[in-house]
Image 1 (cartoon, rainbow, N blue to C red):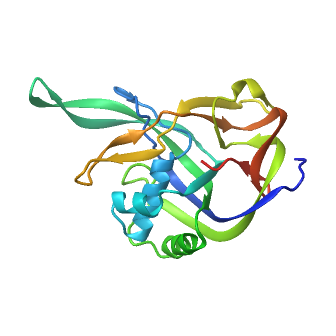
Image 2 (image 1 turned 90 degrees about the vertical axis):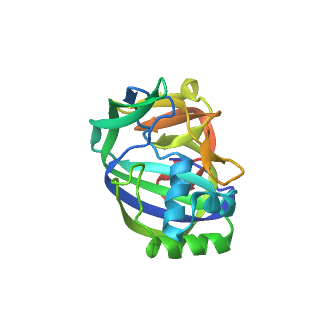
Length: 233
């Protein structure tokens, strides 16, 4: 990776893994697909569990947080049968759906906010108030490490297994076999009613999710730490 130093920023680097994870796609019905990366809504919810806050409270506290993420390992995909209840013609009925999940995953997150909030998050992650999960309540997270690091914004030629803003398919060339690009609208924010109840999510902007190593047609400015290059979402 070749680059020249530009801008510097402090971040909280968080490493964690899980035996299973499922980030339900917003348009799933009979087949509930999973995203490859945890959406920002999932990350903020996990941070709220660590801090012992209700969902609306943590969104009010972390409304300006920026998140970068890198997929370090994935064992593969699986599918599970889920029994659900649905309302049809005014009656509650049972149904079975297929839910996709990931297994043996490891992620690194880069969190950017005020110094005070980063310190609070580091303390909370080391001593979480509630169990940390990745999607479902039984997708327990094994927290590995949290540390304060310095990020540098640099022109990058090669990027690997991360999330980028916009649809960048035409700008990227795979460098490995079995590389994949997924372009989708990831949930970026929870929406609440006046009573504080969650009523949905915002997912209007496209993102490019990368699995494997890719090369940009022309260098693109990204945030860099060690061998990781990513955007802050």
